Length: 591
Image (cartoon, rainbow, N blue to C red; front, top):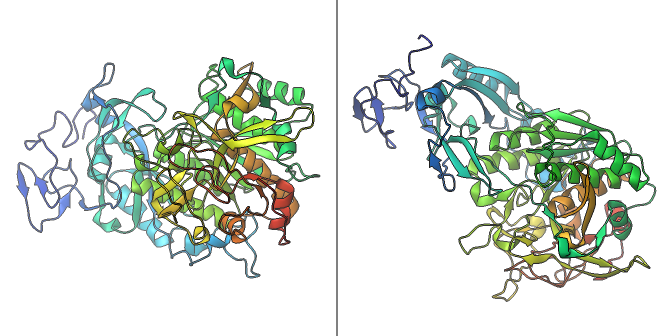
């Protein structure tokens, strides 16, 4: 085929049917066959495309306010000739043993979690035969496999858009749409279900990146001008939350996931110098071509990046940081998380400040991400994630409650937010309540519609405005909390400007830093923390290692004694938590 000859099914090629075939039908030249005939690629010529089977969980709705063929976009013919790379996820070689992730990590033979940095067991990686079959199938169809990672069960597959549409049974066009951050972007777009070559039925579990619409927003807020002077440095918060003495994260790594923005070293040098400490070493990792690019806009994504680095760095200055920059797509998000989990040396904690309503994710993408978090737990890595900044609705406008993902994954430590007021003379907390300034400035939290109630959360109840308190039907969010209200926010430096920022995106790196210090003292990775944190919880009672938050709401859900869907188990008492994790009883702190 010459460079100028269109692929079958592309604009300019003969395609008399026009529309894509319906389920159970196949396009064959100018005829459509029904019944038991094999499904073929949507853009395949007569009988030449691969036989396809539907990919469960891949169905996708239209992007919000999608405008097709926006000004400045190329032609459909140009789109279909564009070379792109997608992420293909394969099944595990074997099923995860019941209870293994819930215990925090796969046992090492002595009843303890595996040390961080251990390789994932072969039974939980992709089987060599599956990898070989997938590579042979895709290359046989004309695509190029540019990367294989059996441990994370991922392939990166490249080819012209038209060819990949044929292989995966879909159509793509170019649209502009409004993303999770309410900004308009231009991107590839699909709707409906994907398919995979029949030879890979059951082997491929997800195909991500064909549609590259933005997948997440960063939940951070700048303090309004009238907010007053109530703000804290991370060092202040380390004292308020009683982080363990004689720890600073030395010997540990904190991984930070970023889907945009960047930082300059001069900002970090100035910030940590003004705090009177030596900052951490910070290394950047490029994922799928994304790099550290400071935009010079302190109120853009740079604000998130520097907030994450500075909060984690001030609270755990001895821990090295790796910042993974990835495209803001479902493929980029998964690839960054997977690379961090399987990196060497393994991190003690991974901090994720990006997310959006779990309903806006495809089921295949949610499952692929959750499986990656299972891997993290197996390897002794704790993943912290922001629970969202838009109250119980999570910025959705359908009048219903929504949980934010990835915080709603049961294998992630979900981080909610509070409003904190402290007596500056004594350093004592005078008030800490649920953060709720408005529907667009309040801690996320609620009940997942995608994940069932975990075994370790069976004893909790949730109180909504309708009452009475009842056992949630799904995974309850968040697990833990810390200050997030921008009106009592974090003092940071972004693009040469000192400012105050809040949001649950600050809570995720705070907890990641605490985990790094706990791991330093504990001597091994902690993995999934919730089974331990919830183990001593009695309904309506303060959890050991926490200070309970009992006042406030995030819209539909109300704070209560014990766990609630606003601030989880509460805010940390770091020293008491260390005692809990060491296996000794710890006194519960007051509300």
